[in-house]
Amino acid sequence: MVERLVVIGGDAAGMSAASQARKRRPADDLQIVAFERGRATSYSACGIPYWIAGTVKTEAELISRTPEQHRANGIDVRIRHEVVGIDLAGRSVQVRDLDAGRDFAEPFDSLVYATGSIPMRPPVEGIDAEGVYGVQVLDDGVALRAELDSGRVRRVVVVGGGYIGLEIAEACRIRDLEVTVVDRSATPVGTFDADIGGFIADAVTGLGIHLVLGDGVAAIETKDGRATAVVTASGRTLPADLVVLGLGVRPNVQLAVDAGIPLGPSGGIAVDRRMRTHVDGVWSAGDCVESVHRLSGQRMVVALGTHANKQGRVAGINLGGGYATFPGVIGTAVTKVCNLEVARTGLSEREAETAGYSYVTASVDSTTRAGYFPGAKPIRVKLLAERRSGRLLGAQIVGREGAAKRIDVFATAIWNEMSVDEILSLDLSYAPPFAPVWDPVLIAARKAFEAVEADVRA
Ligand SMILES: Cc1cc2nc3c(=O)[nH]c(=O)nc-3n(C[C@H](O)[C@H](O)[C@H](O)COP(=O)(O)OP(=O)(O)OC[C@H]3O[C@@H](n4cnc5c(N)ncnc54)[C@H](O)[C@@H]3O)c2cc1C
Image (tube, rainbow, N blue to C red; front, side, top):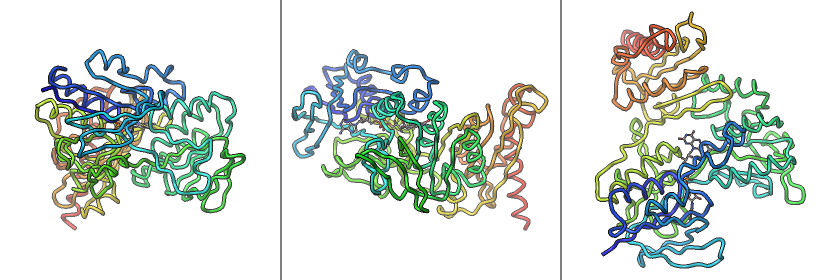
C-alpha cells in the first residue's frame, strides 16, 4: 500500500526532510505532500538582510529550489496553503487554501512538523501597529523591502541588537536611512561576552547607527494605527517611520501544542536523536524543535539554518528507511557588522558558569596573515578552558576579513572534546598570505594552556 507523508513548512527543515525521504523511497511507495503558507519554498532567510541592502540583487537568488522544482522531484508542494489543525487520532491535517479561501482535510500516515519560529513580540502597547516588522520568512523580507522601497521611510528603529537585528540595521544604513538600535544588554549580541561585544558596539556606531544600550522598549507610539516612535523603559522617545523587531525568536509550536504533540522543557518540540516526536509517526525538525547542547547537557532551542538543514536531512533519511541521528549542538555562530567579523562556539563565560564549569580564559591579539604581508588584518581570539583538564569549553573571535571562519577549528576541537594542549599540536596550514607562522588559533591555545598550568600551580 502507498503511504502518505505530509510535511508542514516548506523551507530548510521541511523540504530537506521531504527531499531525503523522496531520494530513498519512490512515489509508488511514499506520496509526499508539503504545505507552505508562504509563496516560496527552500529559500534563504539568512540572505534577506543582504537582499534588502542590495548586495544580493534579486529575491529569486535567495531561492534554492522553487515549488515547481520540488514537484518535478516528485514532491507535491502546495504553496499558500496553511495547516490550521492536526488531528492525531484521525491521522489528518486541516488545511486552508489561502487563495481559494476553502478548508479541507488531508490524511497522513507520517507527519513532519517543520513550522520554524516566530519573532518575539514584547507585550507592549502599539506592538501590533502597522509599520512594526518581524523578519522570519521570505514574505516578511518582501514586505519589509516594499516599505523601504516606498520612499516613506527615513527613520528606522530596530528593537533588539541580536545578530538578525544588526544585519537588518546595517542593511537599512546601507540604504542611507537613519537607524537606531535599542538593546537591553550592555553590549549588542548578548551571546558574546561583554569584552567581545564592545568591539561589536564600536563597529555598529562606526556605521553611523545610533546605539541605545541598557534600555528596552516600553511602548510603541502610533498615529492612525501606524508606528511613529519607540518609547524606551528609561523614557526616551525614538521617532520611527518603521520599527523592526530583532529580539530573537521563539519556536512556532502552537499547532503542535493544540494537537497534543509534547514540548520539551525549553518550549521547543521534544524529539529524540532521530527527530521523532513522542507521538508515533510524527517527526519534527528545524527552529521549532529543541536540541541538546553537548557541553552543558541542557535542552535548548537554537534557531539556525545550519541545524534546520541537518535535522531535516536526518528526519528524511529515517523516514526513507535509513538510519541517521542529530547528535546535538555546541553553539557555533558567525556574523559580520560592516567589515567586522564575529564568531563564537561552545560556551560563553556566563553559559559556562550556569553549566557549572570552572574555567580559565585567555585572549590574544594577532593578525589574519603574516604581519608583514599586505592585507594582514587584526584578529582577537578569546578561549575558555576547563580548569585542570584544559578541555576547550568556548571560543570567540572578532576581527577583520579572514578572522571569523577560524572558529570552525575550535568548533571541531570542542566537538571532539580536545584540550587546549592538544589543539596546540594541531598540524594547521601556514603560508604568509594566509596566516602568521603561529596561527592565531595556535597562539590562543598556547595562552590558554599557560593559563591552565598557572592555575594548577596557584
Ligand atoms: C534575517 C535572518 C537571517 C538569518 N541568518 C542566519 C545565518 O546567517 N546563519 C544561520 O545558520 N541561520 C540564520 N538564520 C536562521 C535560519 O534562517 C533559520 O534557522 C532557518 O530558516 C530555519 O528553518 P526551518 O525550516 O526550521 O524554519 P523556516 O525557515 O522558518 O521555515 C518554516 C516554514 O514553515 C511555514 N509555516 C509555518 N507554519 C505553517 C503552517 N501552519 N502551515 C504551512 N506552512 C507553515 C513558514 O511559512 C516557513 O516558510 C537567519 C534567519 C533570519 C530571519
